Length: 176
Image (cartoon, rainbow, N blue to C red):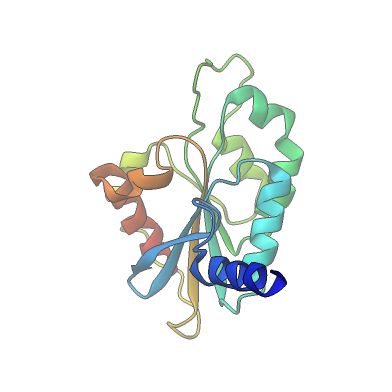
């Protein structure tokens, strides 16, 4: 009986492809590995970026969309500390969900506290001016890693549709 249970566990591990939206590889764009992750809490972001930093990439780019104004305000310092771990942080506008901004909270405020952070006015911006920004180039063109994180407008399977695809194009442009 123990042998069969062990074989079943082994088969299960051999076929397990991971949990969706947990460092899920979405593909390669312009030579950069692009991953999606559901991380939307500072502790999750910290764990994700720390782990990504151990994988040998020359630089990890984190594109993050905060979820709700109240949550972003309540966890502001934690978000700043966690997002500083990325080689480059790209912030999308806060996904408001059910809220309106009564706190004066914005992704721009986060970006002001994160050295070198890029803040987008809209997801549509990625298809135009952001993509045409001068790219930051590492010494070598190999070993680039990009990562999308959070909940909201560009999360999950929506990455295959037009607007989020422009978002991926813009992200990959920053990885050049």
